[in-house]
Length: 204
Figure 1 (cartoon, helix red, strand yellow):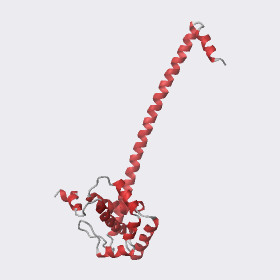
Figure 2 (cartoon, helix red, strand yellow):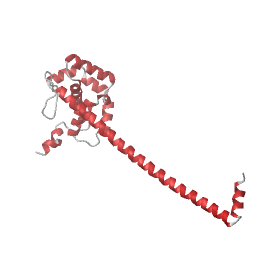
Figure 3 (cartoon, one colour):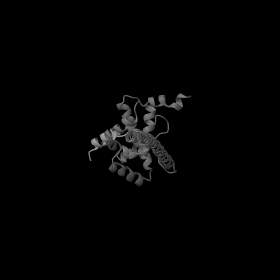
Figure 4 (cartoon, one colour):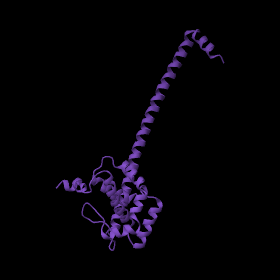
């Protein structure tokens, strides 16, 4: 079909045919604009929905981590559990903690995984103070140990904890304090800065 010739014939024919073409072109233009607006609104709504779903998923993950942390803390406080960390700040290992650390080679596990640990902390802790770093080590490392240690190391820790009748969560926190000390040292921050940055103590 010779479309250029057909269009030429229509345009050179009577006014009615020409008006029909103009009307059709106008309708086509209107539909194009309407469809473009609809697609734009749909895309914007889809992006907005994705952002909202992302926030919901993020909040859900935060809640899950809080529940894991709460359960772990309650498990550590069960009667008969060893106290591996001193309660006063800056937190340090107790004698039991030092002994247990030797049993599952906590220093060795930290050294083996140090690049992975430091990379994760650098990503999660931009411009954080000593107190924030300590809380991170006590909480996130205990709740998500798979982000910091290899599967074999986690299995070793779990086996020792089970054999000793201890909480795996407490072993992760023990490692967290060792990690805090090394990370602060690499950052040129004294452990004594933990108390100075503690918002609870600053308020007093």
